[in-house]
Amino acid sequence: MVGIIDIKEIFSRVFQIKFEDGRIAIATETLVPGLKVYDEKIVQHDDREYRIWNPYRSKLAAAILNGIKELPIKPGSRVLYLGIASGTTASHISDIIGENGIIYGIEFAHRPFRDLIKVAENRKNIVPLLKDARLPESFSYIGENVDILYADLAQPNQAQIFLHNAEIFLKENGYGIIAIKARSIDVTKPPDEIFKEQREILEAGGMRILEGIKLDPYAKDHIMFLLRYQY
Ligand SMILES: C[S@@+](CC[C@H](N)C(=O)[O-])C[C@H]1O[C@@H](n2cnc3c(N)ncnc32)[C@H](O)[C@@H]1O
Image 1 (cartoon, helix red, strand yellow):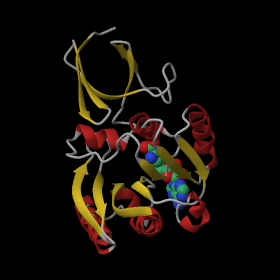
Image 2: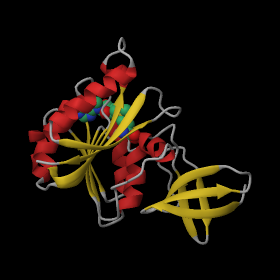
Image 3: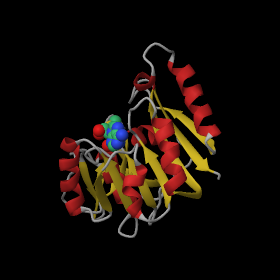
Image 4: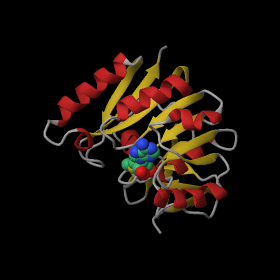
């Protein structure tokens, strides 16, 4: 196994690892030692266990590697996640927020949801909800306003769904993170035109755009917006 030269915390509980062969990766320190969630690599250092965060499997990892300047997800954060799927990205968020944080994970497809349930059995800070993100009233029993609204639905009207959920669940000055795939919206238009339109929809809905980070080469023709919500 290739040795580690250096581990540096680049955001709260997100680490950059330099290996002896020159490779650089990002990782989170696992909340559940010994357990993998997807096919991520696990490395040990100084009695700690880290899960390498794969940017080809997680758009949030791609945004971090592409230089996002701020990551509002912190220990204790409360997160509503639309389109959590089987929990690949959410498992790293779960590592970051720790035992005092919570992720309400909305997913409407049964197959990824079954895998998500297994992940949540070992990670008590993930609450899986088999729900349709277009109908936030159907999970209003969450009963709290969250610090972060995260969306990765790959749907044409995702920005509208995101704003509808923000109105109900996002704190004033809370943060939004939304991954947008140009081809899910319109295959005929250039991606930059789509990103501009989506930006305008989000701004008109009360979101201030803090950053827009393209996710190439990890996810082609995708952008991730980091947003702040002003009522
Ligand atoms: C690109 S995948 C999400 C990957 C995941 N965010 C990750 O990084 O690990 C999009 C997911 O959104 C789900 N989805 C799409 N529309 C939805 C809706 N209206 N309500 C709930 N889930 C939805 C899909 O079933 C799919 O699992």
